[in-house]
Figure 1 (cartoon, rainbow, N blue to C red):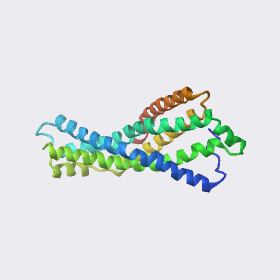
Figure 2 (figure 1 turned 30 degrees about the horizontal axis):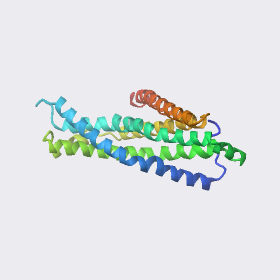
Figure 3 (figure 1 turned 135 degrees about the vertical axis):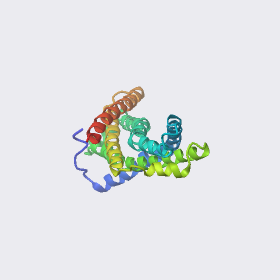
Length: 234
């Protein structure tokens, strides 16, 4: 992996590759992130409403609990796990296919550092675009919660917005984005690693893709525990 983080020989090509990866990793994932976020926000609101079904607890608690669930856990962790499946498998398959078809060998013959050329732009693009995806996910999830709340009369708009604004701490957003950046690095570096080490044929590319998704998911869950302990431990 130390070959990946060497200084790019041509920054113009590195910049072009990074922009291309931003589109592949981020923009092509926007639709699935949006759909899942809206529905998960709606489900979170319904669950909160039914679990806080007592007059002793104010209705704005529904909005507050939904916001905390979405910001602290759902968007940064669940969406990253989904991206590990979608983006991670694509990266491992793409690089693995280049390996078995000897395109990476050709790059080495031409004097190009293939690990740096292929993997570093993906890591840079992912660390840049994933936090933006997560912010969009948060907004859409809270919007989905609001829509289902008012359409089912579980909570009024006034109470929901009051809950969203209650006890707000900007450090929660920072915590979510830090986790997202770490998860983005894990997804792209692990997937790139398995793709780069692929040997054999098409079947081995599939195996490398599966390993990349499984290992990325495991490391996301592990680092979620570690970062939660480190960042939320006062």
